[in-house]
Length: 277
Image (cartoon, rainbow, N blue to C red; front, top):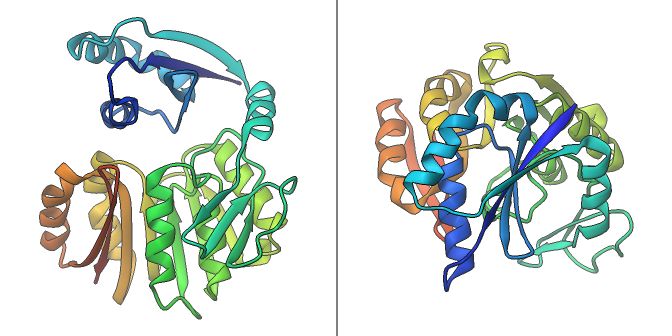
C-alpha cells in the first residue's frame, strides 16, 4: 500500500500561521498526518483515498491561490524510516514526554514511548498537546475511556498512565490501529486496550466515562450524537482538531446534544474543548 504526500510551499512572512490555515483547508479531506519540512507543509493520506478527492483538492488549492504544490507516492517502509530518523522528543509542560526508545528517558513527568508509523498523533501537533493537557486535569482513576481516531495511541497511553481502567481505541486506518497496538505494548498497557478498525459507529453501544476525539470539525459535528449516546451520565467528552473560529459552532452543536462546555485550551489558533454530559 502507498501513501500520497501533498507538499505545499510556505511562502508567507508567517509560515507557521500559513501552515495552520492550509491544514484547516485540508482537514475537509482524508489527510491524516501533517508536518512542516524544508519550507513546505506536507500532508499524507492513503493513495486510493487521495485519488478519490484529487480533483476537489486541486480546486480548493486553486481557489485559495496556492501555487507550486506537488505530489509524490511513498511506500509504508520509506515513511517509517523517515519518521524514526527525524522524530524529536516532545516535552509537554514538564508533565509528559513523548519519545522513541532511542531517546533518553525524562527526569520528570509521564514517559510515553512510541515508534511512530504512518499515523497521526505523535504529540508534535498542537491538538495532541492540548488534549494531553486536558487529560491531566481530569480525574482519570478507574475510568473507562473511548479514544476515537486513536492514531499512534498516545492519548490512550496517557489515559492509562493517569489510572484509567480500560480503553477502547478506534481508527479508520488499519495502519494506525496496528501502530496503536504496537505502542501500547511498548508501554506495557496492551492488556488494557481493545482496538477496532472503523468509526464511532463501529463501537458497540456501551457507556464510557471519558471520550476522546481529536479529528476535525466536520467529523466531530457529524459524530456528536454518537459520542453523546456512548457517554456516561456526568462523563467527560474531550474534542480537538478545530480552529478558534469554529468554537461557537461546535459548542452550539454540543449543547443541542445536552452537553455543557467546561473548559477550552488554545494554541496557535487550534482549540481543544472539554464537555460534560
